[in-house]
Amino acid sequence: MPPHHVRPATPLDAPGIGTLKVRAWRAAYGAFVSRALLDSLDPADDAAQWADYLSLVPADDRLWVTEGAAGITGFCRTGPADASLDGDLGDGAAEIYGLYIDPARIGTGLGRTLFAHAVTDLERRGHRPLCVYAYAPNTPALRFYGRAGFTPDGTTRLDPDDAVGVPEVRLVKS
Picture 1 (tube, rainbow, N blue to C red):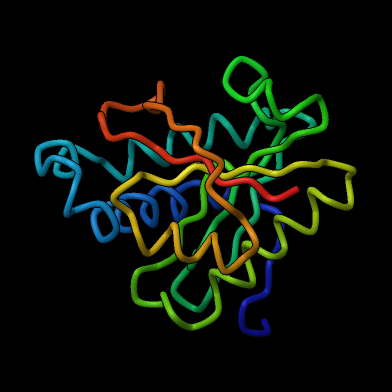
Picture 2 (cartoon, rainbow, N blue to C red):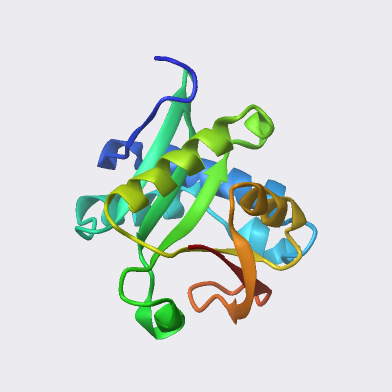
């Protein structure tokens, strides 16, 4: 398989996605997420949630993965923007819900390749504008999204799906 090959995820990828997500969270968020929360993350629980999601993926969602010899090296999930949170962006808006890369592969171009693939897919399907959220203290992510053409628009939120308690910044690409 060529380096940085991107493909759609399948239910068989759930264990690798769960393991990677936990490792990526612990590496990226250790400076501003509580140690207790990070220690409580369980790759098996996360894998079970991903398996459930992958068995019933909503029609407009996509979950892209990259893999290497040792398994999943990155994943990116996309879909329509939530009208209750991002209704100001309009009906055609979409969101990159998450981008996670094996911490050992950050800086190799893997993240750029995977993110560009996800953005291109959304744009080809007619979605505009696109948004992505990043935790406010996560300056590497904010810089990464900025280099990809996304700009903070002043909107912030507390993620309703997790117990992090850290504001997220919305970045938008028109």
